[in-house]
Amino acid sequence: MPGLPGCRVLEVGCGTGNISLALALLNRYSLWTLTQVLRAWFRPSLWRKARFTGPGELRRLLAGQPDLEDLRACQTVYFPPWNFPALLPWYATLEGLGRGLRLPCGAFLAAAARKSLR
Image (cartoon, rainbow, N blue to C red; front, side, top):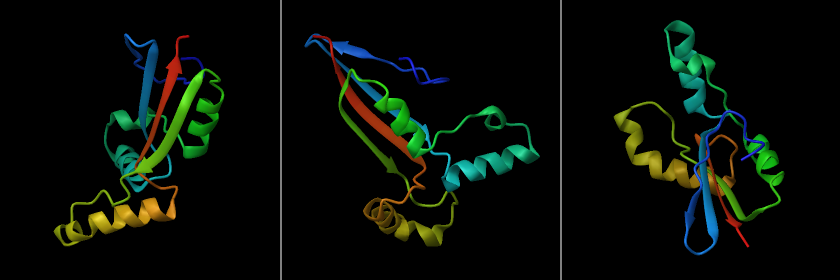
């Protein structure tokens, strides 16, 4: 798919004449990404060369694809990337707040669309 540099997109055609597309990318503005980037400063890691995408960039890339229909995008995983047992009961609440307030800091950007072959 042109316009998505560095991403491999798997398109699966089902005999109905439609192709479905699904993407999940790490959000540039999430605590999860910040944690990985900071760790990569202090030890060898594949995250040093990783390129992360923000919500606006994903919208622009997908908007430039006029053959996509039913485009949907969202963010998910708003709870922090730290393993604190005391936070576990709050994860569902934090996820609900993040989605409800439409915060730009979800760990993953997800998008789905359909492309008709007709």
